[in-house]
Image (cartoon, rainbow, N blue to C red; front, side, top):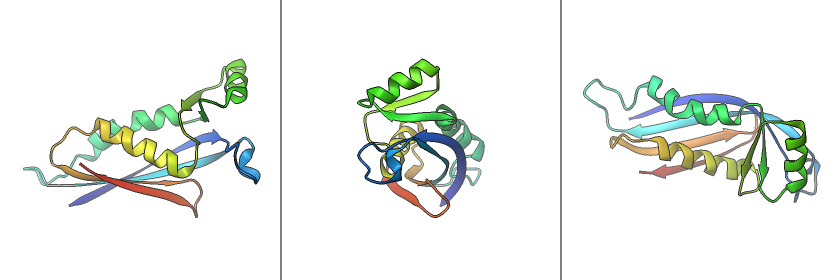
Length: 137
């Protein structure tokens, strides 16, 4: 059985290696769909939607209205520090693909039920573009 829940947040980033517009500071309204697959419990649930929110909302709250920046992008980190702006410093380029992997791993760390067999994360950077990956537990 599989369930799904969606989350949204606003976040800025840039891709310094990019030859187009994405090298500039910009932001997106991100949407994430999380699918959780597993066995039903005695009440007929894979996992309660409330528990899904309890697991994932803190992760999304950390990102909401922040700027995600690679740890080597010192110019932007210093700029954000001067502005006292919310930032999330990561070890990877902030592509949709890498953000998806990052979120999938953070969610995996917080799942404790042995009934859960698979987690799939789809992150929409725009209405028309997304990255997706899944992991079996």
